[in-house]
Each structure stands twice: as structure tokens, then as C-alpha cells.
Image 1 (cartoon, rainbow, N blue to C red):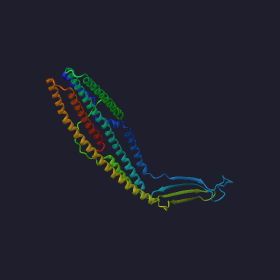
Image 2 (image 1 turned 30 degrees about the horizontal axis):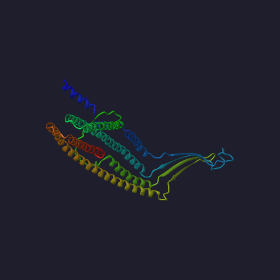
Image 3 (image 1 turned 135 degrees about the vertical axis):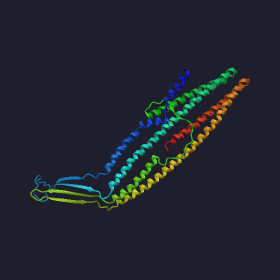
Image 4 (image 1 turned 90 degrees about the horizontal axis):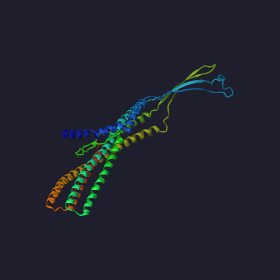
Length: 387
């Protein structure tokens, strides 16, 4: 019966653990920036519709030639009229269509901004989760080391070791306990950070800490790069828009003028701005320079992506090599120390000071191995943003 209960308990505990990907999805749902971008997408869709609508017509009404000596009399002279007039600005180029195209591209960019934010979230949560996982390994290691140190302390009692050596061993046990408590506090702080970003209570994370080889190379279709490419597309359309604006709009108007005891009359007007100061040409030149600027920005960000991923890849591979090297050295050393303990214990020639020195060396190597493991996964968490 007991054989059945233990696997069931282990399985139940594993069900309570959150996976990394589940935490990332939960962080997506809880992230306020993603919610804001969702609303921004709706705003940008409204902007698409707005950008294709003409300006409203202008309605004007008035009185002319008001006489100060007889302000209410409207038949004293022919110029006294009451009128109503309407005017409408009519575009003669395709600038409204171009403005709508630019707004549509900007609306598409909101979806790309959302993907960029998701990658930032995934990278952040992964960094916390991997750090928690490594802390768990450190706590396991400390537990094993404390058990081994207690074994050495028991040997000391059997071999009547000096009082100072026994006290030093007890002090080492207390230091290991202090380090374990510090690690637990750090783990709790990291869990609190994950709970902050996920709005979800987390007690345990199911995460794989096996360093794996990765194809190191950034995503050429990364949403951030797409954003920059679409900025270039917008800049190119702005050149077309500036050229379209070089062709002035017409303002067409019509009015009805009513006179007391005289004939009424109509008026028709056509107006357009005189482009005498060269502002339109300067706007076009500015738009061209802006396009060059956007192209330079894309080249810079692509270079930054490539160099960052290259550095992360080199660092990860070095950490992975060092971790494997420590692992290959530590396990044989642990076995050798175990054999050494047994042999010296049987022969009665156990050198306790040398034993403790060798044991401390093993602890140091084990901790360095976990340092390399931590370095690997912290760099991998950063790399997730670029893949």
C-alpha cells in the first residue's frame, strides 16, 4: 500500500508546479501594457477611417453695412445685404488615400508592438524562473553538503579530534544553514516578482535545467525589425504625401445675398494658396531625409541584434562547456572522497584536517558548476527575446 501512496504523492506535487510556458501565458493575460496596446489597436483602426474623410464644409452667415445711426434698417443703401454662404475644401491630389495608407500601416504596427512586448515578458519571466530553478539546485547541494559534514563530525567523535576542529565543523554547519536561509529568501523574492507580473500565486516551478545546444541566430522576421521596416514604408509614403501636398487644394464656395427692396444675387468663389515661399518643396526634402534616417535606424538595429545574439551565444557555449567540465570532475572527486573516507576509517589513519580541506574543495567546485549553470540560463533567458 505504501508503495502506491508515495508515487501518488509525488505525482500530485508535480501537478501543483507551474510550467515556464504556463507562467508566461499568465503574464500575457496580466500585463497592463498588452491591455493598453489592445486599446491602441482600436484607436488606430478609427484613425484609418478618419484619415480618408474630407474636411467639413464651412457655413457662414452675416450682415453687411450696418449703419450706426440706424442699425436695424436694412434698406438705406444697395450694399446692405444679408447672406448665407458655404465653402468646401476639395483635394486635387491623392493625399487622402496616402494618409489612409499610412494610418493602415500604423495600425498594423500595433500588432507588432504587442509581439515585441510578449517577447519582453517571456524573457523576463524566464530569467526569474531559471534563477529560481538554479536556487533549488543550490539548496539541494547545501542539503547534501550538510549531511556529509555531519558524517565528518561523527567521524571526529570516533577519532577524538581536537576541540577546535570540532568547533570549526560545527561553525561550517551553521554557515551552510545560514546560506540556505539566504537562498530561500532570494527564491521567495523571485517568486514574488513572478506573482507580481502574473497575478498568480506560485509555489513551485517545473523547469528543465539541462543546457542544450541552440542554433544561435536572431529571427530575421523579429517583430521589432518588422516595426523598423514598416517605419521605412511609412517614411516612403510620407514622401509621396509631401509631393501630393505640393499640389494645393481648392476651396470652392457659394453664397446667397438678400437685399431689402432690391434684387438678390448669388456669389461663387474659388480659392487656393499661392506657393511662393517654397514650404512644400522643403517638406518633400525633409521627408526624403527622414526616409534615409529610418533606413539607417534599421541597419543599426539589425547590426545590434546580430552582435548581441553572437555575444550571448558565445557566452552560453562557454558556460555550457565549463558546466560539463565541472560535472565530469566533481562526480569522480566525490567518489574518490567516499572511497578515501572508507579506507581511512578502516585503517584508523584518518587525517581529519586533510579530509575537511578536500571536502571544502568539492563544495567549491560544485558551487562553481552551479554558477556556470546559472550564467548559461540567464543568458538564454535574454536570448529568448531575439529568437
